[in-house]
Structure formats: C-alpha cells, structure tokens
Amino acid sequence: MKVAVFSTKVYDRQFLEAVNSQYGHELTFFEPHLDTQTTILASGCPAVCVFVNDSLNGQVLEKLAQQGTRLIALRCAGFNNVDVTKATELDMIVVRVPAYSPYAIAEHTIGLMLALNRKIHRAYSRVREGNFSLDGLLGFDMHGRTVGIVGTGKIGVVVAQILNGMGCQLVAYDPYPNPDCQALGVKYVELAELFAISDIVTLHCPLTTENYHLINSEALEQMKPGVMLINTSRGGLIDTKAIIAALKSKKIGYLALDVYEEESELFFEDLSNEVIQDDIFQRLLTFPNVIITAHQAFLTENALHNIAETTLSNITNFEQGLPCPNKIINRE
Ligand code: NAD
Image 1 (cartoon, protein in one colour):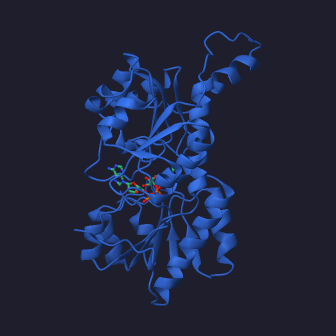
Image 2 (image 1 turned 90 degrees about the vertical axis):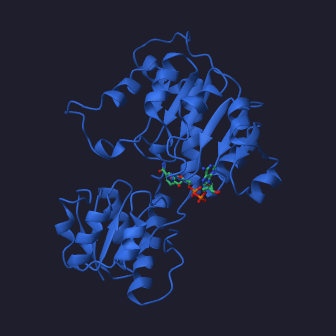
Image 3 (image 1 turned 120 degrees about the horizontal axis):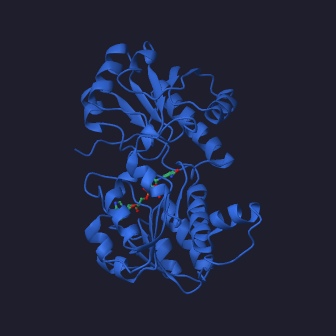
C-alpha cells in the first residue's frame, strides 16, 4: 500500500525500512509534520503514517479524505492529536500502536527521578569544569519514600514494579485499578489523597478533554511542599504557568518533563541556532531543579522496532480487509 510517512527522522526511517522488507509497502518519507500546509504531500496515498505532533484536525482530515486517504496509522499510543469523531464521519480508519515498550517509558521516568534527586545533571557539568565540591548536591534515599502514580496501565505498572524493587511506598489513582499493581501492594486512593501524601507524583494517564490541566494550581496546593513532579505522559496534563509559580514559591522541589503542552513548536528539531520564542518554556529552563527531555522516553531500539512492526502490520490488516485490534473506536 502507498503510505505517506510524516515527521520522519533518520531513526524512524531506519526501523520502518528494515521491518518493511517483510511487508512490502510503498513508503514515502516526509520530514515535515502533517498539517494544513503539508496535507498535499499525501495526495494519492490511501494511508498516512503520523506521530505525536502531527495535527489531524477536521480540516486536515477532510483534505486527506478528498485526496483519497482512508487510513491514518499512528506510530504512537496516544491519539489526542486526532479528531476521531471527524475521522469516523469521513469513514476513515484510525489505528495506533497501543503498546511498544512500556519499559522504555517507565525506565526513562525512573532515570529522571534519580537524576533530579541526586542532581546528576548538575554534577556532570560541575565535574567537567573541574569543580568537585558537593555543596548543593544533597539527595534523599528513594527507599521508604511515597510515590503517587497517576494512571496504572501498561507504563504505570512497570513504574510501580521498579519502584517497588527500590523499596518505595506506592499509592495510585486510576478509575480502573490494575490487579498487577494491587498484587504488588500498591494502595489505590483518591487523587486528593495521592497529592497530599506523595513525595513524588508521576503521571502515566492519557490526555483527555476531562483531565486537561489535571495538575493546576488547585492540585499543586494539595501537594507536599518540595514535592517531585514527573510528567512523561502528555504535556497538556500540566498547566505550565501554575508549575512555574509553584517552582518560584518552592512548592515544587523537583520537576522533570519529557512532554510539554506547546512541544510541537520545539521538540524533535535542532533549534540550537535559533532564538526560542516561547518565554514560558525558556523560564522553565532557568530553574536548577528542572530537567527537560524532548519527548525521548520512547526512544529505545526495542520500542522503535516494535513501533515499526505494529504500524506496518496495522496497514497490512487494513489493506487485506482483516480485523485490526489496534483500531481506535470513536466513543462519541
Ligand atoms: P494505558 O492505556 O495502558 O494506561 C493508561 C491508564 O490511565 C489506564 O489504566 C486508565 O484507566 C488510566 N487513566 C485514564 N484516565 C485517567 C485519569 N484521569 N487519571 C488517572 N488514570 C487515568 O496507557 P500506557 O501505555 O500506560 O501510556 C500512558 C500514557 O503515556 C499514554 O497515554 C501517552 O500519553 C504516554 N506515553 C508517552 C510516551 C513518551 O515517549 N513520553 C510514550 C508512550 C506513551
């Protein structure tokens, strides 16, 4: 099948081409994001393959449908960037990669927690400058600390398993408790209680219209002073302005983000020679107790291989009229 692949980086192409030797699809790679300006590139392609920051709003979907596209194949799990209702109206099928490696994201999450706690980002620069002083590098034992996990699906449960091995006390909030977490001894509590008792709060739920800005000033007020907050899920879960205020007041003691609500303007690109216009993002970078990675939690060899495998198999299922378990069902 002819597939227009958007937002392609060298590593996407490498893994998709390697796996495609078994599938034989006709892949055309485009570096730009899919948006109203670039939709034309997919002309004549029955399938488009997209990633987290491609925009599949009503306008883009209508144009794609007019050009002959019938399948949207997401190379990711989250689908907050797709107007699924519109796609259904247009008789388009949307498929995704629901799981490719929960370990990749969970392990990156733990890496961020440890780096923040033990200030590894600061120690790295200091030692390279010949400064071997330990002042300001004081950390705490993870053992015995309470970690609140918001969302205990595929990623949240792996986070719980690793932290359990480190001797943390685990609490969680999820409308659908996970028996694997319960078996580990994770205690499910209401969100307000999780905020009140956790030393570390880590987000692993999808972004939906209901939980947009889940972490806002009211939520932050309920948290412990000096709390550590980690978001490797979706940027829109956090009200960044409220976070900056809480960093300034020291309510938040540590912050790590792998996602940011305005990331589509920044992430995945080399802007090192540009003047970054996003003042909110730039303010975040000024805090010594903030670590930001540019949506890289998924970036492991295992995950990229699995993404390529599931994406191409989703496309083949569609092409052959077979049922696809990874189809997104419109709930509206
Ligand atoms: P999953 O569907 O297996 O689990 C999500 C869990 O969140 C479910 O148990 C669900 O019941 C729960 N949930 C839904 N709404 C909630 C809410 N308001 N509060 C608390 N819990 C809620 O998903 P997953 O594979 O574990 O992925 C979780 C999220 O991680 C994805 O939605 C995606 O946004 C993000 N993600 C990020 C990266 C990255 O590279 N940074 C990569 C993959 C996924």
